[in-house]
Length: 190
Image (cartoon, rainbow, N blue to C red):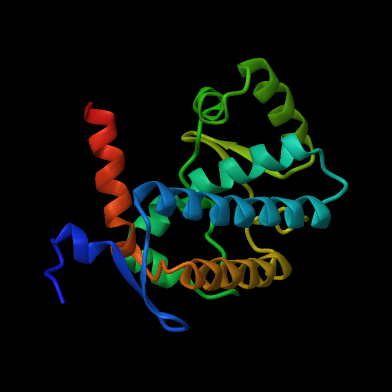
């Protein structure tokens, strides 16, 4: 077998069902990953919309973008991530990182006035709160945003399906994406 930095050897990936498989080229890997991850995202969003059918989809997008911003530092800190990894653990409001309406507007590519109007309505429903640092999804919101066990379990099923589908396609982990990453960066440089 070739070395790990050998482009020819890197084009082969091991799949437990079919053994070593040749990925035709970097574009094939990119397309395969794109198709499967898009399917995962669409199924996830569909489940979110189905579960919270009383909410406008744009409001759900805003809530979850704020929730993600609130806990991104928790996910990036191994000790905090471990501390709040239990399905029963909820990040308290005091450690949440707030986000501004302007940052939310830029992140979601939405007009600032739309974000302001939607945030005001969500604050009235006591889903969002304003802190000195910005907007947070409240720990005690009655809709369990950020702590919905049913959606967390559904996400585990969808993620398992994504990983299984990628493995079946010959992508077992990040090392299998190396060929695609180097090809993409070479194209950008041209």
